[in-house]
Length: 145
Image (cartoon, rainbow, N blue to C red; front, side, top):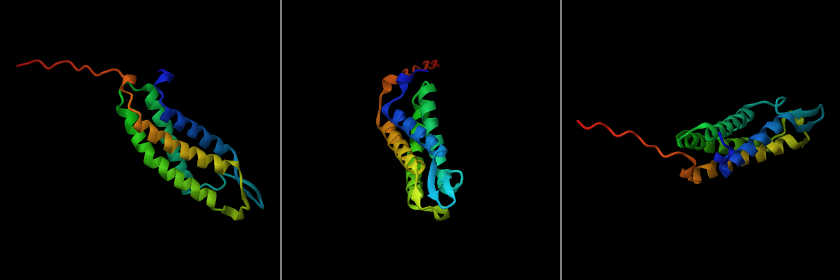
């Protein structure tokens, strides 16, 4: 397992994942009853953001551990639509004001930035074709009849 196997796309997705994880620990909204975090206002939007987070982490882990390009490419393919959905969900979370919240806090902005980085990272991971990262397949020749 070598960190040199990570491409720019996977590194951006990893940074986006870190932003989303930190956003889960930060307050998202300021309301009359106090600060609300992601868990206080948990809903379908958070589920979509968490799905993109899991996909991005799977993309990074598969890039680090796999010997061929098949699984890293497959996870990146799934990470693109999940990242796009997460960006839309994060924008909705930034625009909405649950429980009569008066302002946004750092958590909502971190989730938006993290979701965007996951989407951009997955897109770049698909565009970066460096076959030199993986060993060439050398199948054994078939026995002739």
